[in-house]
Image (cartoon, rainbow, N blue to C red; front, side, top):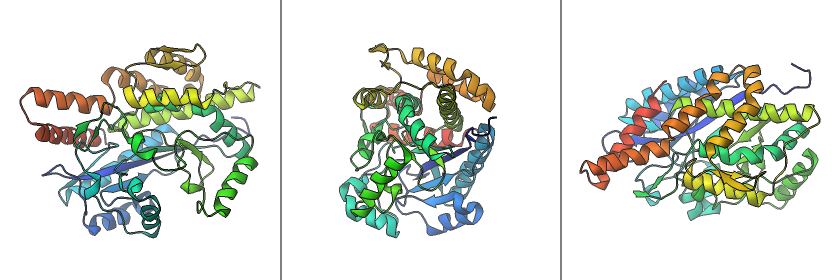
Length: 378
């Protein structure tokens, strides 16, 4: 490893929804003892989220993908075990199949109270969960440069992670409905582009001085420099129901960043495309996942997603080998074959309906599958 090469450490954050095992509905007001017990066992690696029915875990700083898998599996298992004592279960899905946002209660913390007051109904609708992956990029300037280039790949990562096809009991027609909710907040969507770290800081300072934000943690782009750590934080992905998919995407992401770094080391760089073009792919990923292809921006035409994936895997093969995660990255083919969580949820719903179950019971069956798949492999 070169002296100036980033460490490419990995940190994974996942948000879960807590459901009642009997009704399969969201646990609107879970017992405070549950969080206390989780905190006693996991410390700062578990936190409240905006809604009381949500819980968030964060891995330690991991040196490699395998270490990240072990830690996230441990955290998932802990939440599952402690929740079971209260007849609850976590589901790693970015929306609940039939929950209604008007029935939810937000967590009583100063930060969340302020968010609820400022954002009003836009915040109240945040019955959504995501997955955030931090990659250690210690140099400030390099972090901004890689952010500018990495934006191109964000739709590809989203397409492989979709887990939010339902909203309030309806098939939305989108594989990732979550982002339609999140995008109503300010400072979301694709990241801005900056020529330098100083330029980025200057813009953040303007917003802070104007009283628009307390700090850069209130910038919720799909990809951002972390405000707390020397990392680049990718936030576009739905939370993956299966742990193996979480790890596959974390591995693919860190390999793409290493590939981009390697290009720069050789005085090359990824082409910077207009945000309007990347937004089209972002929308296609939200709508179809990988079913209808994405635009190959170099060719200017829609191509099968499998073609783009094979191209990316070829580009990062050297990096996957160097980082020791070739097997995990190859899991992308498994996702394409099996489908995302969104595909599985929709298929289960169709099967249940075809078997004669009404919509309510069919949606409860989807929740049952989510409970099982969340615990798979942990």
